[in-house]
Length: 227
Ligand SMILES: *Cc1c(COP(=O)(O)O)cnc(C)c1O
Image (cartoon, rainbow, N blue to C red):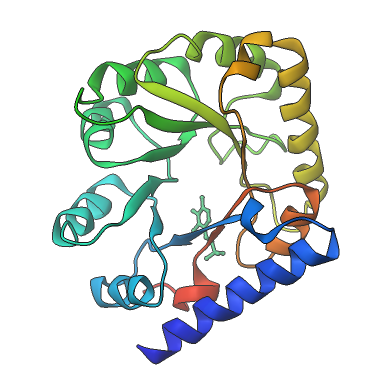
């Protein structure tokens, strides 16, 4: 279990160094520990080493973990594809969804968010390099999607998320520019907390931070290989 603590510290060091190199403050970049296909024991060890935010890809797997770890003050983020028949459970059990790629999903999440919980934080996932295997909305669809999501009462549009192809570092810069363009052209966005760029993983968190990432999603560098 000691290894998780030192791997977590190493990742935090990488984040600090990457921030330093581009004169950003370390607290501008949040670490999301991606725990998909990792054991409960590993998650507890990483929590005990100081990590509170965890990302999961598969709804069923995540719900089991959330239930088993309900006694710990963890914040759960869904980062994997979301089908509309799973939105109710996600609206009840997660604090964030990074992978919203169409209006229907956002609308259902808003309708199904329990009233006793704060609004659900959501990001729109963008298919930045036109991969047909990956989900995400097209860049051209983004302005209309953002405008449609903004009035929904029980979700807060926090920002944008990408999973670019390996070593497509330019995608990080492009997403930061797209965020600025949206802020410039959709005035209502400026009264929201549209502050999140969810980008960067184990292999490219430095490049993502240099481009403006505010949340890096790191799995293997913390937990080791997935089972
Ligand atoms: C698995 C996954 C990650 C973490 O990837 P690592 O390379 O293990 O850091 C980040 N984001 C998403 C969407 C993922 O599916």
